[in-house]
Length: 47
Image (cartoon, rainbow, N blue to C red; front, side, top):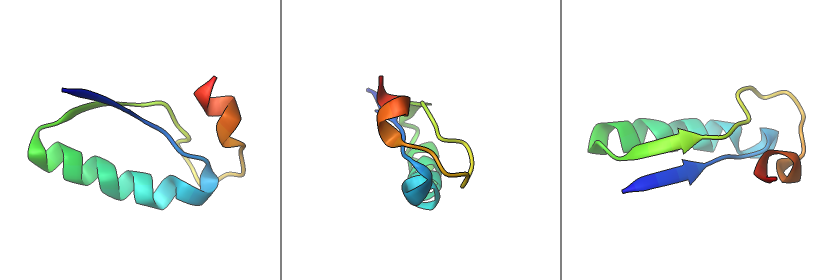
């Protein structure tokens, strides 16, 4: 199974926790951002 994950700045910390969980379970994913707490709009990441 492969997952796509992403978030805006408001969900960044939760996304990082999710990545740790997925890593422990051996579940593959592709992180499409954001990669920091800097302000951004999630629609820009999903398009």
